[in-house]
Image 1 (tube, one colour):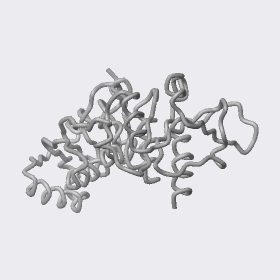
Image 2 (cartoon, one colour):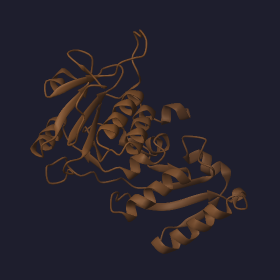
Image 3 (cartoon, helix red, strand yellow):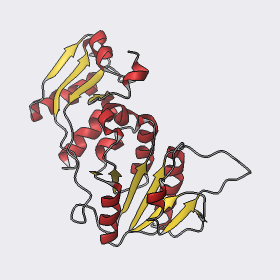
Image 4 (cartoon, one colour):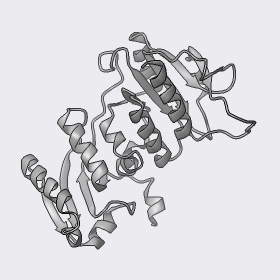
Length: 256
C-alpha cells in the first residue's frame, strides 16, 4: 500500500515538531487529552536537531513520556509524509466533547465543515480557521480526525490546538441556536455577498466540500446564505479550504 493510500487510514502518529508542539501546548491548556505514548527521533539528526531534542528530553522527563533514538528507516516506516524532520510521536485517540449548549462557548465563532472529501483539504481549512480566531469546530459523526496525524500536518498543528466537538449535525445546530448563535451557510442560491453579509458573533458558519456542498437538510436550517464574490467571471468554485479562509477572515474583520 502506497503512502498516498495510507492517508485515508487511521493514523495517530504526529509528524514533526510543529504538530507535536501544538499537541503539547493544547494538552497543557486542557484543550486536548490525546495521550502521547512515545516520542522517537532520528539518531542521525541528533547534532543538527540539538535544540529540538534538548526541548523534547526535558519535556519527556517532565511528563514521563519515553523518548527513543531510532534509525531514519524506522521513522519513515511510521510517517505518512516526508516533512517530519526526523521527529514523530506515537499517540492515542483524542476525546471529543459533545456539541451541547453546556459545552459550546458563548458568543463565539464556530464552524461546521460538511462533506469535505480529503483529509488534507480538511486540515488546510482548520489552519485558516484557527488563524482567524475560530473558537471551535463542530464535527459530524464521520470525520477526518481518524487520520489525525495527516490532518495535524496539513493544519500546521491547528487540529490539535482547536476545541473540537463531535455529534450529529442536527444536535450541533440545535446547541448553537440554544446559545443564540445565528447559522450562516456558504452557498450560491438566494445568497448575499460576503462583503455585505452580517457575520457578527455569536456565529455558526457552515462550509461544504467542493463536490457535494452543503446538504439540503442543513441549508434549510440556515438563517442566511453567504456567497463569495469573485473579481472576474469565474465558473469554477474555490476549494473548501479557500472558501473557509475568505469567510473566516471576514468574520474576524467584522468582529474586530
